[in-house]
Image 1 (cartoon, rainbow, N blue to C red):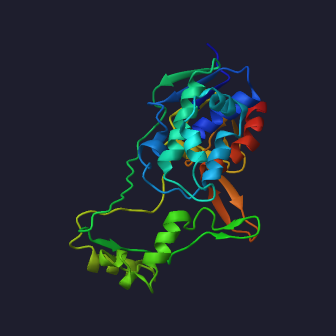
Image 2 (cartoon, one colour):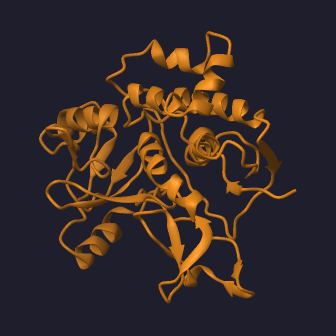
Length: 305
């Protein structure tokens, strides 16, 4: 069978890609590949994490596309979306609730006659990632920040440090417990000690040498590294990861010569959009609603190409 598109991954971005392709090219067959169709890392590893995203944007994600709305209309109530609708729309929520909504949409799209699902994995390497969350009162934590706490700031129609600043429950916790003037007296200060690593590489290493002895576990919270893209070929020539250059503005890929690789596109946390705020700051745009807005803009271009 010939397919109009092959989509690798059933996390929020993969889900949004399938929805956009169905909306813009309703007669095109889609092969959708994922190891288990259980929502990706978003659902399997981050469910207990409080979201940075407001609940209303999760709802907007579910209602952004006609194929999604069709699934919602066919799903009996109460369901994962109605659970979100019953919450304060201007606050975050546990990611588990948004993940359940994604699973509901995934199940619905899997039954679409234009979608063929295939259990499998399209990847070239694996990345072990860990998110640690605990409430054990006997645990002692040594915190090694390189910078001061940074918060997202809501401006008129835009957000400063939208992707790099703390928001929601995480920001509330940081302000109440982790700022320098409150940490020594806060509840968190009973088991968290701060060891400042700012001031350059030599000071950072010295701080580690002085304070890491005695620690039994290390959690490196320094961001994400994308999995390797599987081995591809173009015109009979293999394309390795080092040959691929991602275009953060339209989702396409180029080779080292700057030539477009036809038919290959990326989105999601591994391949996010690059955005520029009114002050000229550039960030990589990560979040379910951000993925949706990006894909609604670029998928029509993908189909044309």
